[in-house]
Image (cartoon, rainbow, N blue to C red; front, side):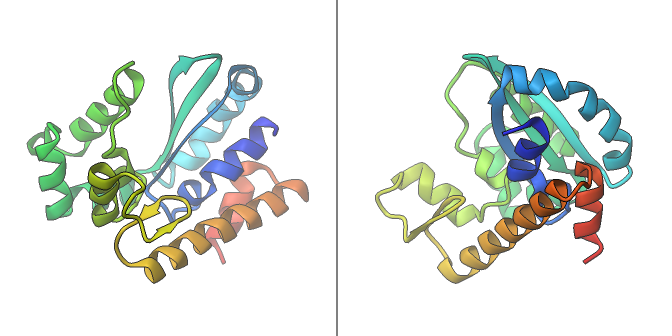
Length: 188
């Protein structure tokens, strides 16, 4: 997959404002080929409070965190989510930026992958806790994430994410840039 295709395939829902964040890796050489595009795209996306953060390089791969600040702030400041994050050692009392910085620090480190990242990615808290405590054993459905709670709601959300990525990919292949494909989707 090209740089642009990878961004759309993995990050379109966050770039289109329907998902708080996306986290994915790509080959370092593919990332290097598109690094300037990220710089060029950032003014367009930052107008909508959407951002790209490149993280650790491991085994020749780059971890990319794409987020919609407005949606992400709403998710992690919700009272039950904030209490959960506090229990995981996040500095929720210091606000959104401090919590985001802590997540990015944890993702960039070589330590264990933080299970709570699912909350930042928009997964329901019941599913994040279910995966953390039960792994795959108790899940009721599996798609973009393991579902332990409301299967129908999760399916609708997953279908919406897939439809967004598929539409943006079609527009990308039709000649639109990543920013223009995301903009077209948000106007639907």
